[in-house]
Length: 129
Image (tube, helix red, strand yellow):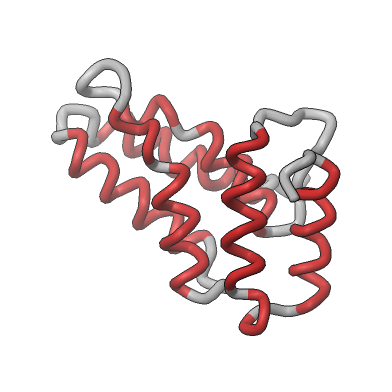
């Protein structure tokens, strides 16, 4: 059975959680960002960077050593960007969908239109556009 992209992403993060848990939060976030970029090489760098700017804000909140424990939304974002999002299990909020819709809209001319349509439909369905 094939794994969802989010499952592959979170499995990689789990390995880092075990091996790099004592790294500084900034180092953990850099590792998380790098892993996310690797999972989304099919997209222009600007799209990935702008989405990461929104979705990594919460990684510094909470206990000093646990940025790896707060990556669930990034996993869900991976599924969105791989067109595998399960709306029945819907952890992304309106702010998240607004950020996703804004970034995709800003970069639409550099993206496949079917992909843009998929993302914007989800954003509309979540009252973010």
